[in-house]
Length: 314
Image 1: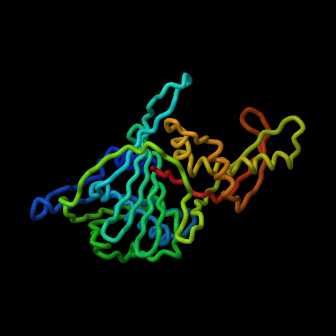
Image 2: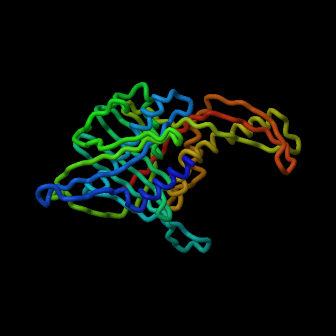
C-alpha cells in the first residue's frame, strides 16, 4: 500500500499537479504559492520518533524544491535519446530535468528522471544552515539523523526562512509524513528560460569534506550450482553478484538513462564497474536453497554501501 501511495505522489509530481494554490496577493507582482510534499523514513528499524524526524525533514526539503519549480528562472531539461538496432536515432519517453535554485538563503540542486509522466528517480541536494542534505526518492540519505540540526517534527516553527508550514500530518500505517508549505514571492523577478541539456555525464555525490555519500541497502546475490563449482566458488560468485545488484537498485535509473543519451560514449557496465569499485559490503550471510525449477543455488544476503550517482549537465 505504501508503494502505491508513493507511486501516486510521484505521478502527481511528474505531471505538475503539485501546485495547490497560486494566487495574487496585494499587487499583481506578489504571488502566494502553496505546495504539498511527502517524506518517508530512511531507517527501517529506528525508533518511531527518529522515523518521524527523518520523514519530516525529507518532506519539508522536498516541498522547498517543489516551490522552486515555480519560482526559479532557469531549468534544464533534456530529452533522453537512444538508437535502435539499425542505429537510427529514437527518442524515448524519458526526460531528465535539472534544477538549480536559491530560495531565500537555501541552495537547492535537484535532478529528476521522468518516464511516461511518472517520476522514476529523484535526487535533491539542499544546502541549509551550513549543512548539506541529500534526499533521494523522498528519503533522507545524508547526513545521518544524529548529526542533523533541523527543526523538530513535534515542535515545528511557523516558518523556515520565510517558507511557512501551513499543515503537516503523519500516516502511521504507511509511515509517510505529509506537509503543506506556502511562500510569498515577487513574480516580477522571475524570467522563465528553457534550454536543452545536450551533454550529460556523471559523478558521485560528495559531502563538504569531499567524502562520498553512500546509501546503505540490503540486497541478495545468487549463483546456481553446476559443473565443477565448489561451495566456496559459488559463495564468491554470489558475493560478487550482491554489490552489482545493489548498484542497480540505488542508481539503476540514472545509469540506464545516461547510457541512452544520443552519441553517448558511456557504457552501462563501465559505470556499474566504477561504482562497484567504491561500493563495499559491510555485512553478509550465506544460505543455500533449491529454486522452483529444481536448481541448487547459494544466496548471499548482504548489506552494501553504494555511492550515490548524479548526472552532470553541461
